Length: 108
Image (cartoon, rainbow, N blue to C red; front, side, top):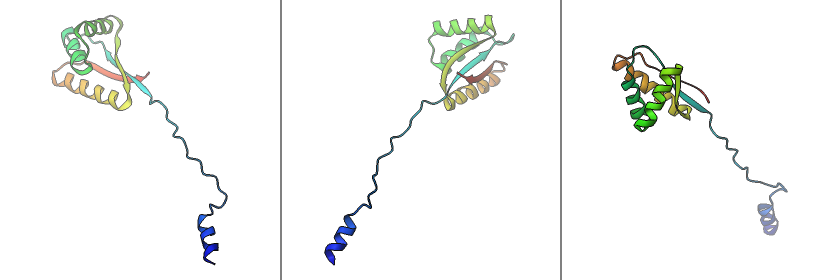
């Protein structure tokens, strides 16, 4: 009888078990945008781009001029959490400095 119990314990019931492979997909990306206004100084926009988006001065000036001439411009493309954080930080900092600069995000 003990031999039968051993066979029963070692029997897998005929089920084939395959490890499921994880299905990974890239996260949705979002563009962080600055919108032009008639009151925020250009130097402040360059400061925002340098401090919050780690852009060098040359690239920051290029984006600032794009925002100034076209009405809005992309500061960077990020995952949702990072984009939301950057938008919130830029808007809070702009208000604290008494500038109406608007930062927003949209799907890339």
